[in-house]
Length: 126
Image 1 (cartoon, rainbow, N blue to C red):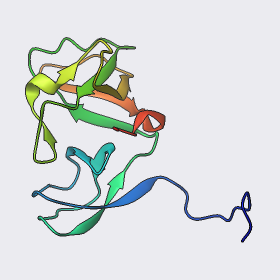
Image 2: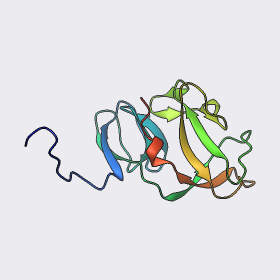
Image 3: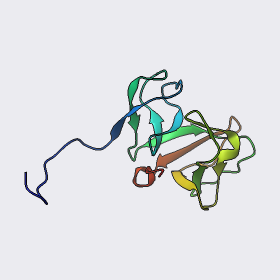
């Protein structure tokens, strides 16, 4: 191939990443410069799919985060342990070191679940 030539690689809805900590399928995670959802369970050393598409998901958010319909929920990258964002990582305003995770399609309910469309175009965490 010459410079500037391209070829189709994948649909871009997931990226394979190598873990350095344990994750559970469906959890929000930050790994190798990507923010998304674990496509399967994995332990340190495993290579798994990190989902970074633009579909609607139900996210469990911290009790203190007042997510209204239309709000964008961000993750503060400095507040991640292993691959897991801690409660304090979830914020409603963009700032240095934050990456958009989802835009709420419904307000957070009594069980701390907010439904939203994952903002895959913001999945690059570095």
